[in-house]
Length: 211
Image (cartoon, rainbow, N blue to C red; front, side, top):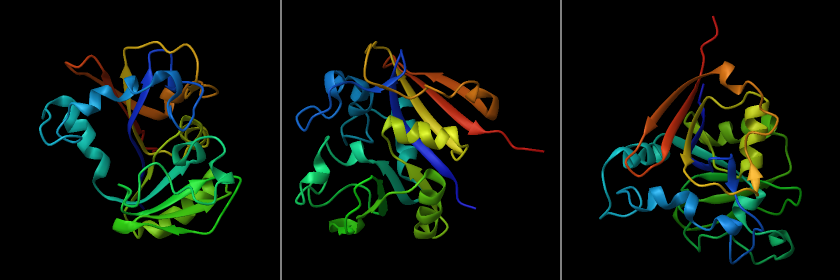
């Protein structure tokens, strides 16, 4: 069976994956781009970037993915569902290149974009959304691609097989936290930590095999 994976998911030292308030001008609120600066210097992001530890982890994001699931706030700023012309942050050719399922309480018709991305808008619980995405992935893995609420919801019901989390050495103080309600999550996963020269720590959570 295909795996459910999370990659390049950045959080602050106090567990926030985004700041506030989120707007069209500030998608990550007062956090700005500070949570993702570690990635901007990598070859994964820029051909002239580095090929070190950060790049090695970032590169894993794109291999073997057949479908994507994201939250409503990853697709657009608050209120985007009231704008019938909103097609996401990424322009006419989004980077996903797969069927991409947006979880929202305001479904709309599917949106076919350039480059192989088609956005599907679902009002569905995690298990139902994952079943639909797995069928679309055709044997490949499904990536859960933010926001923090969606990641937390999938973790809470045990639907994540592998998670790559990047702890960034900043304190946000407010925003959307990923860990709330996930007491003792580490009991279900083997956890490894790798520190990078950029100052971030790469944490990988791999589901423990049941005997």
